[in-house]
Figure 1 (cartoon, helix red, strand yellow):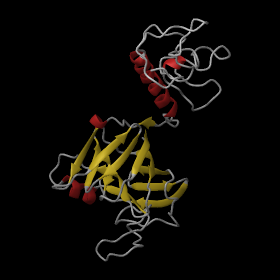
Figure 2 (figure 1 turned 180 degrees about the vertical axis):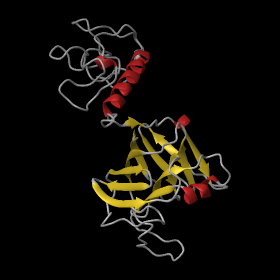
Figure 3 (figure 1 turned 30 degrees about the horizontal axis):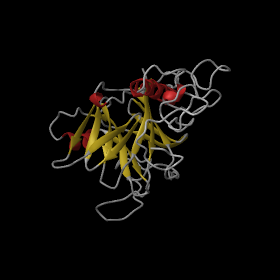
Figure 4 (figure 1 turned 60 degrees about the horizontal axis):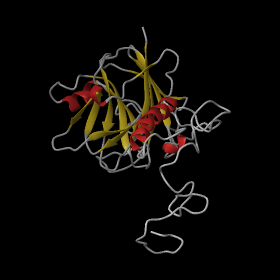
Length: 287
C-alpha cells in the first residue's frame, strides 16, 4: 500500500534519496518501538524497572516502549513478562501494611468456604484484595483458625442503601449440621444494613437490625449512618463475654454476651441486590 498515493502498487518499493521508504512507520504509530519510555535509574530514564514513571506515585506503562532495545520482530512475549512484573509491583504498592500487633487475614479462596442455603447461588467474588458478595443466602467461613479473644478490623463498602450484609464472629465450624442456623444461634453478627429492615413486618428502622447492631441482641448507640460508596471500618473487639463494636472510630456497641466465646469468623452473603465489598481484614489476638 502506497500511502502517499493512496493506492496499492505491484512494484517492489524503493527507498527514497535518504535511504528511507514510504513504508517506514512514524514514531508512535506502531507497537514495535523501543526506547521512547525506556527503563532505568532516576535521572537517566523515563520509567523504573517496574514500568512506573519516575516522580509519579501511581502511573505505570507496559509495552516495548520501555525496552532499551528490541531483539525480536515480535516483542509480545517480553512485554507480557514485563506486564506480570508491573502487576506484582502495583499490587504490592496497594497492599496495606498490617497495623501494629495485627496480622492480615488471608484472602486466598482456598482459606475460605461458602456455606449456602439449599439451591442458593451465594458466592464471594475475589477482585484481587477486595471480596464482593453475590447471591443469596450464605456465610463465607474463614477456615484457617478459630479465635477466642481478639480485635478484628474489617473495611467494608456498600453501593446502595438497600444492601445488607454482616460480619460474624465466634461461630461454630462450617461442617456442623445446620451450620447457618447454628451460626445465628450461637455466634454473633455485627450487622451492615443502613435501613434496619425487618422482613417480618416489612418495615425499616428496626434498632436490632441496623448497621452497628449485634444482630437481634443489642442495638447500637447513636447514629450509624455511613456514606454510600465510601469505605468504612469495623473494629470488633471480643474479650471474654464483652463485645465492643467501633464504626469509623466511634464506639457504637458495648455488649455483654452469654454465648460461646470461641469460634470462627465469617462474612454474610444476604441477597441478590446486595453486593457488599470487604477488604483489609486484620486480626489481633488478645490474652
